[in-house]
Amino acid sequence: MSTDHALVIGKFYPPHAGHLLLIRTAASQCARVTVIVMAASHESIPLALRVRWMRELHAAMPHVAVAGIVDDIPVDYGNDAVWLAHVALMREALAAIDAPPVTAVFTSEPYGDELARHFDAKPVTLDTARLLMPVSATRFRNDPAAYWEFIAAPVRADLARRIVVVGAESTGTTTLSLALAQALRVRGGAHGLTRWVPEYGRATSVHKLAAAIAHAQLHALARPTPEELDWPSEEFAHIAATQNAMAREEAAIGGPLLVCDTDAFATAIWHERYVGYRSSAVETLAEEDRGALYLLTHHDGVAFEDDGLRDGESIREWMTGRFVERLQATGRRHIMLNGDRESRLDTALTAVDALLAEGWGFAPPLG
Image (cartoon, rainbow, N blue to C red; front, top):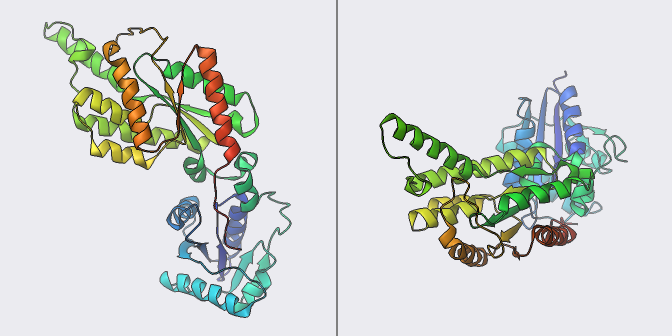
């Protein structure tokens, strides 16, 4: 490896396999590489998130440094003043991390030679025709599902659209969410990677009740019932945080859609149900990982089944109403699912297809 210092610049909106090939090629040839993420303030993916992605993706390469800077200057390759303004921002980002002089500029764009000239550096231009990696950020933004294979795990974790199934006890949320995930998988392509996130709160209930039963038997006490379990407020915050973490883990290895059997938003409703008041801690967690679409399973027409953990048959109507109130109050996109299982699944798939048809809503980059 030489003593050269390579510069790689880009919007990384979002970062994809072509970007990673360019950076890793530079890293294989140069002793140091600086990646500058240049994001316009109006763009849909914040600069800080793009910088975080790039640092995470190159964490195992200590000679690769990542810096970020806001660049709201329009692109005009034929205007010297505009060129100087962009380059000034690059130099500002380099100075912020005390980078040495740039000796090589690696790009996959036709402007590579001109950019290198501004740094009095050697130009290295790789794969402008996108033959080695047939992807570009523009292509991805226009059709994320078609190019999903070209983005890495940290990016998937944030860009996968959460489809969240919520509802009162014994209204078919788990059945519906599993069926929906399977229906998406059989479509193939990127949707064949669709993952499903189980309800962590239910697992917590199972362990809590098992521990209470064991304690009762050891101390010759009456067998406890689910409604006798103690649910401190802080436990719901733990459940919500764990639910968020589970969703991120599954999204990182899955497809464009992630099906969730509940989320932190629903945990906040359960906090109200068991504790009697709202939790700001849980609701903060609910805002950290919002679903793109909520499917609310109505209690009408669904028989209550006591599986040994449920105790809320008498308040299912209240729960359904509370979900509606909070979904509306927080501006979450949602639909109500009624009818038999087949009808609910058909309605859910129609709503998911409508979401997909709208795309991800990326703001266009500065031209």
